[in-house]
Length: 450
Ligand code: UDX
Image 1: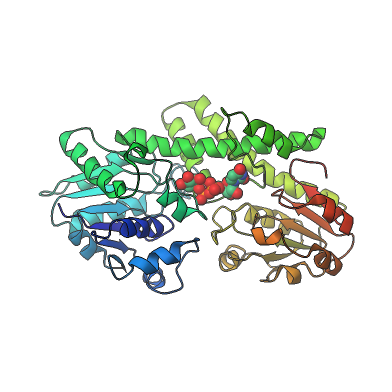
Image 2 (image 1 turned 120 degrees about the horizontal axis):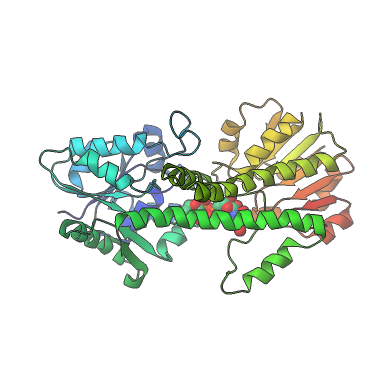
């Protein structure tokens, strides 16, 4: 076995993870591959394909030394004995399980390519989030090979976008699942060694393959469920006069509950939460576990309901009509510090506002390129870099993403450029409402009466 590492898929997971592995293992060659030439060209340029704080520095330090980006997947497979697979596994849009199950066509294609190109035994590491027991299916594809043996490990990634580099450098835990036979245990040890270059051993957990796959789905489902729970409370807070921020502080001080992931808002977005919860629902259903499936599905239903509620409140506050009104969305990324807009609540809300015939203006410091693609189907949308210009002549602003830069805007100047009475809906509880009200804004926030 050589020490080289390949990764199939140069996306949000593959790119940053391999960069940190390369940086911390300078004696290993790390080759990241993708079928998209444009994506690889971007990784090899100064304009990286994804925005992530700290990523550029790591890439610049290793690229061309022990970190390489290429479309030549076959050569990478031959050169490396540890092969990570970090390809897309989006929710299926067709056929059996559409809307719930993961589309595994890219994963299967990757497995077939590995099997075709391999020149010896390989350790194959699943990085993409996959339905439980996928490793088994992948092993079945790989085991058709007449000569070489493939050991499939599960090594789910827990990094969050916007903090990816820090999460990779200081993970709560690294999880490695593998077959519990002799060969499997040896493969697990080989992968432990990669991470042990910088992660304390006690934080590297090893389990059987299915516990590992299951833990990733379970972790994301629990986090998503916390957000839906807080959003459910936020609706009740608005109805009763309670304040969701105060409730969150009280809950967070209970060490059994913990203070993280208690922010109510426009609902969760991103490539993982919805996909993984839907996956879990599908898995439960396919094992005949109806009550479990219904329980987890409610997390998604609550998330959608929150977005509908935000639009309903907007319509009500703007005298029950949005037709021809100009509404500015401040932020389009699904969270701050990323340009990623996958499953962003801002898109659902933009679509609902467009149904009411509103004119939309969208601004975001990093996500406008993606926003342009996401909103191409709508007619009355303008994309604007400058938030002051975005608010010009607007009837309302919906603050969608908690970008730090929105805290420090000159809100007096913004108000002066808007059509009166100007409304500001802070869906992220980011701003100082006393000041905004003094300026003259009609202020709305999630989970509180302002
Ligand atoms: C998530 C998981 O955190 C990560 O472990 C996994 O590997 C991938 O999925 P990510 O989607 O990048 O990461 O972002 P995260 O910070 O978890 O936020 C997800 C969504 O939840 C965002 O839309 C965010 O705005 C929202 N959120 C988060 C809330 O609405 N409230 C909170 O309190 C926290």
